[in-house]
Amino acid sequence: MLTQALAAFQDVMLEISSVAWSIANDEFARKQDRVMALREIREAHKDMFEKLFDAGAFERKLGTLDATIRNTPPPDDKKQAITARFRKLGPIAAPNGGSFIGELSFRLD
Image (cartoon, rainbow, N blue to C red; front, side):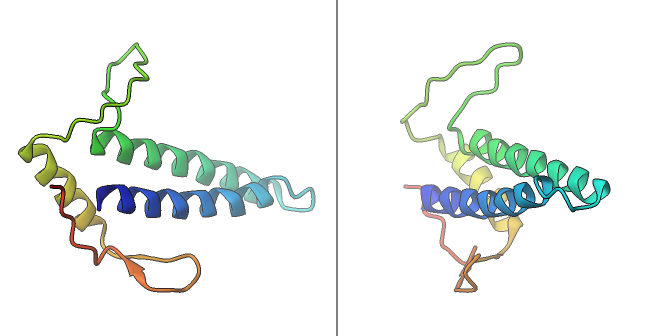
């Protein structure tokens, strides 16, 4: 379930980035709009990495980059923290206007 929630969040962030890139690359857009679009792209990528870090896909080691992805399940306290974090986000509308994501029951077993 966590993987599905992360994938859905990544899809939303990619859609935001896609629209923002079209604005940033539009030569007829105002400079202010292009700058704001680039900021949105940066924020979307930052948010996605934050969620991956929160989910335990990566370990934060300041000053180093450890690209090893761990496949071991997180401890119970970390599972509860992740579940609480995703519930706090609330429902996210699907980009195609379909059902809502966020009503999922996050079973991390």
